[in-house]
Length: 431
Image (cartoon, rainbow, N blue to C red; front, side, top):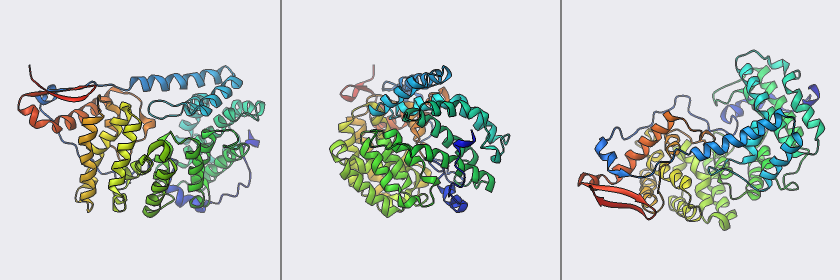
């Protein structure tokens, strides 16, 4: 396994401080998270007066689990040729779930999970020393697969993502974590090996968003990511403009805690709107700012609120699925009411974003997706976490019903019943 690792990678440890701010393409949370507010309990009689379908996103979960299991099966059977072909096919077709998870990512995860998950547990438990990374027998299967298919970028993605997973296990993904020097060296060695594999392929020649996304995932390990982040993400978005997850990740990386500034975020959000206008109208602006707003209220200082709202209109007109409607409804009704916004100097901007809930509810929302609402109460919403569990779903159902019922509280208290149908909410006499 030793020859998978590049000696003398050229990555110094001076970037560790930067990595503390930018662990992976994962949202960083404050060291002491602020508890978010919720409207509190609502009388059962009010909730019973609200009739709206509830979907626990089980289709999303089933789709994800199937593709992950497929990748796991193919790897276990050493069917790497079939695995590589399927991954490349998903990638080139830009196939993804309703919540924008690329099927190629899910297939890759399943293929490497048997190897990576036990190693990650051992690394985190301290049972694998950072100096032993060049001698991990569990990676032999992946090494052989790569040797047998050196020109198959599908197989290469499985291996390089496995190396990235292990790198982050050594480093830790918390922004406040500062790995020891041996663990930092292990992080850089593993990431350098992943990059060496990635360098064999050109994302544009292969028509591959997955390769471009892997390049973006290398940014936190670079010595000067600020010089590359815009170009790397622009390449990715150019290859796959219909997947908003890329713009959302780019917006997070544009925050000052990572590789940008508030000014750069605003400029790049406008650029994304211009570059993707044929797909999203002004929606590129909203997608780029969405998660950045979740993470950092100071984004409101330079945010063009009218443009953000116009972007939401354009997105919901072009993408009339209920996942997207729930995403923005929960953003306006939940995220924009968090405790961190209390006493904010940006009250007009906050009120404008909260007010968008009215027209989203009337014009677009037709059913409740509980997991989306539950994740909206966190500092950040990573849609990779859209895996069903009853506790999270129950929390999300309660959150959605409280907000929606309060919107119609006057009608409900006057004896009406609110029924959601294809044409939106209808006020009806209670039987």
